[in-house]
Image 1 (tube, rainbow, N blue to C red):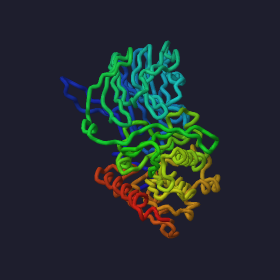
Image 2: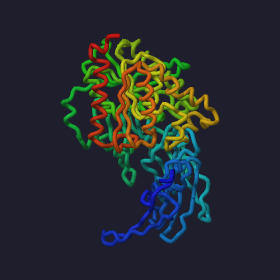
Image 3: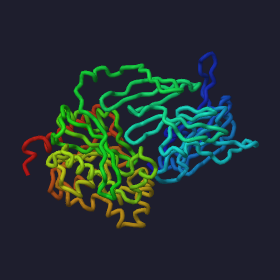
Length: 504
């Protein structure tokens, strides 16, 4: 194996098959040898195709992708736009022309916008025009015509659908909310003529179902009841909490799931479930599970579950998403720890029965947190990085650290060491469960093995490492997913709930 090389069968090509009497003929490849195709849309007359492509299947080339237009198998694939950070075509119609999605920035935490690609009289592409610059969120296309653009986007702990008026190929006013904010609305899709919107709606107590509404007014009609058995389940109540961070007073939100049968004033054990990214988000939706962490099972065990949206999370605009650039393992962890303080001060969390967990960047936070405090009785770190110097050369996206730390390791060894939990591993006294996929390329298993061996050798805390064979960054096998969750339930039971675990 030659590092960063790829085999022929890893390339994604664009093929076109002609239809005759609803039967597809032999597929003919259009895209050239040197392009890895990741998305495509047809022109309105179906004579050309626009596709997003990059120079290689290697993930790092994503930042340098471009949009190409091709008018036949033998025609040239010509680049029509190549914005920094890469982009993908998402629509092409008569009224609005070609629309692509991208940040327009090489690296960073910028909003993903929708851009119209105008063409000059000679057929050449002109500079893209942003259609969603007035929306401080990542915009996902739902529908576009000459007078309006419909997009979906996260908003704080919720998700909604917006309308943006268009005129002369540009935004002609601010975004307006098409939904009522009462539920988490996602998966939006519009009828071809833009008259009807389909979407899923859910909340903390009800799983997603399909609804439709006319686009001239929000009048949702329910079409499905996909999980009727949920009506017979006893679930923990869910709500959104906010608190000021000890780091500068920034307002932080989190989704709190209360234990089944909770009564105000009860102090209960609490477990943190920290999202990854760090530009992920914890939403006020039906949180039956969060990956390896079965939220509602925890609620049935008597736990409160807090999912904090620390600085760097999506859903709160571009400013907030960029607040931890240059400062991971810094104020972002303080935001999380401040949430624990708030739940204790509000009489919800029992300070003697706390636990911390998270996957990916949530695992990073878990490692970091247990080197900074001994307040937690148990910890579970999933696929987390702890040694940022070695991580830079192990991960398939080292550009992540250009964004979130700035310099490369050899340009500032002290910074990488300072923000690495491994530098402080001797402080760990919290019982630690570590879980990771054997074939994880994002946060390779070596990171988990390194921290495990150190904790075990130091001997201040019991620790267990579980490697999941043939699994990538997210464990996919249903059998192994069950094992993931079962081990976390057993770990919390052993170290937080069992009476002997409460003895200092």
